[in-house]
Image (cartoon, rainbow, N blue to C red; front, side):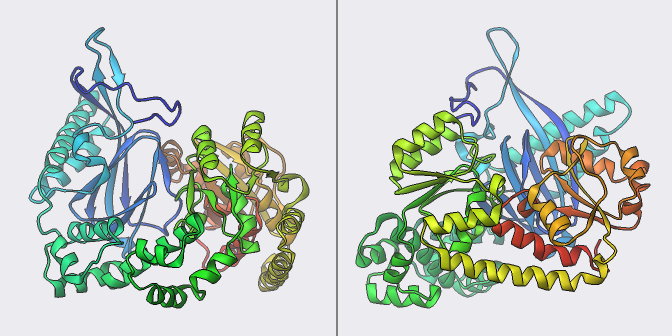
Length: 550
């Protein structure tokens, strides 16, 4: 396993001394709000679901969890939750580290990046169910939480001991067969489809993998995923076909066979019915072998031009919207961890994919620029200096997409006018708005260029305070802003501080807080500066200024 910061193998030695566990923090989740950004966890995390059913997004993997189950998230990874019945969700998240004694000097050495316990069994890759142990697990969860925040240091020590017992019980349960648990059964069948989509698969075979009767399997699969098993399989095959068409340029017959269709004409009809274009027409429409390097915000300029890149940085946290829109059709996925953290690996992927043109975000280092130019011609974005609209026009001219750019801009300006007219009464007195960003325990003025263009230039609101740097809560109260637009960074330390801040007298005494005019912003679109991001910001404004705004 490689450490993402160093690209070097982890130094953990399975044959070393005994483990010791340190619990750092606990989060209780009772009811889910609207699904938002995935969060970055700087420690290993154990999520225990005590009530409800959720979809757990863990980095680029989606898993279904039901009551009485748990999963691990390695440190420096991301996770998020969504649910059909958000109010029923009851979960606890434990942030912890595992250390191992160094037998040479009796010191402690940090854990593997992945969940190291029972690593060979792939515990970190799946949901753990503990049938028959749910009540004990729930009791231990409550005990750990109660003792963790106790004033008595002996009680706090007891929290550490209880957490180790909880951890041991869940790890032990992970070795038990899944049995007939419905959620786990469906996941087995779904995973089989993802891995063996090119095989001849029947409903009876899939039901057999799930160890359910065909009739019951068909019923619960549709209920869980919104599609029949065969429709889901078709979706997998056709999305994979898109990638093959763009990635290999292979013959129609070869692509059809690679995704499980013996008859290329039947495959072509299915493809056209699903996407509105034949495979051949789709290939022609996406003929540019163009790669995106660096920030995924570049994708916010390509989508208005109706361009699908050949290679791009995609991740469900750092490029959530683009990941869901493009992951199934972009042949080469570059690593988007912390927006191009693993640069050398991405450069090698680009070299291997042999693009015809590379579009990179502004600000790449000199050594990166040199490497990129050896791979293909490079175009560097300049939106931050010339503005997003000018940048879109320049890019459209380069890629021969001026007509597409103009059509998109016409639609954008019509939408801008429509939203301004919708909000005319609420904005006519230029409400005082303060854009803020919370990171760790520091509140700062949000200097995001896109946010400011939308609020203060397009909508004409009044900026309650200009400038940069941190701002104290006492200062915030004195500004008498009518609306706070707040972006809370999604890392565990910031979220822990935010949970405490919301119940503090200082925060509750702020005028906009008392009036329910604090608008929580997601990282996308509000931290990005691109045409797509500006479009989405405009779309979110009516809800912020409605009477029902929280």
